Length: 250
Image (cartoon, rainbow, N blue to C red; front, top):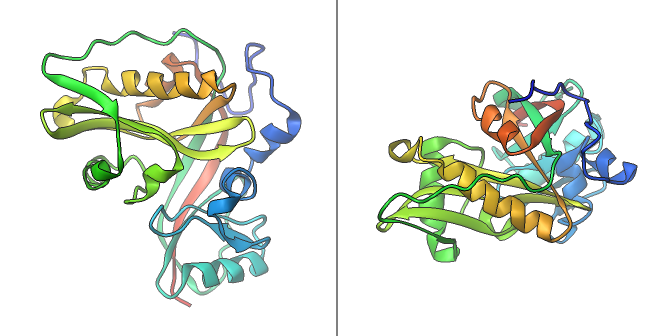
């Protein structure tokens, strides 16, 4: 396996993207909610968020008091939002921190070269539908791949692997920006780990993204050992972000 790319490195094999498209990744939630997910966005030019039933992801154009005030209106009393930022957060009074962390943003640098994984006997794979949403939320709550709600699957196709009627693994799409789609919701039940399910499902999602002429990217906590899996699938670290889940107590 190649040495891990450092944040900011761009191998020559990276898919060609316009500078304006890449620049949107510097503020990805804001970028998505201001472009290809604008139709889903609540808010205005000072702050935007996805509907709470889809998830807490929210974007602001800058760490300004005006943006946080607008974000507070979107969150509502005791509402929780999730933010990504390249710069340190400058959180004003009226918010309490629920969780913080560091994320790597990874972009797929190669085309093709996806692994072939065989399902174990008795396992089935299919595209997930709205009737699967409760099982998807339950799996996400067990494995914590990131915020996931009953309507998160409206952001893009999700695929799952079942043992009988039980959902054991899933992966799908979340943020959409011009030329870029995020792979997200990747998780496997503890009883099904080590079987290559995440690789298989991610490969399906990546192939779907690339058939549409787009580039796959993702976000992962910096301490997550799954980074090695993502590197094996052709992803390289682009930049490191701050992450915060905030509750509006103002």
